[in-house]
Image 1: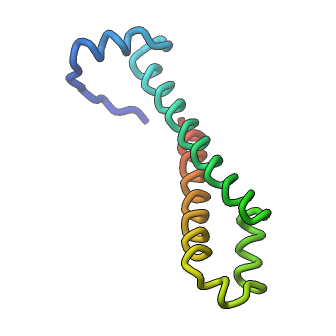
Image 2 (image 1 turned 90 degrees about the horizontal axis):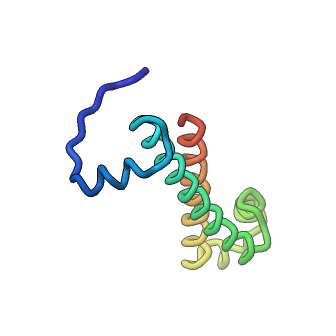
Amino acid sequence: MTETLTLQLPQALTKQLEGLPGSSWSHKLRLLLKHHALIQIQEAESAIATFETKYSKTFAEFRSWWDSQAPEHEKHSYEVEKDYSEWEGWIGEREYWIDALKQL
């Protein structure tokens, strides 16, 4: 499905866009969006790697530990709860951008 969209862009921006790879405006925009998605995926993977290094576990392993083995005083410490929440958020963010990339 396609949709017609009219944009008013400053001339300087139009000139910059003309210099980008792509055979049409649609193609140029698609390439820009792919590039943006890849940057977002890299950012998420970097954040995820930080948590994996900190805990020496994947998120699935960490969640399993959290659910069944974590001592209550660790499980409910501010740092561990914050890390769990942020790590889970980065996993979701990565999946969102991977799905977006597949649609492009």
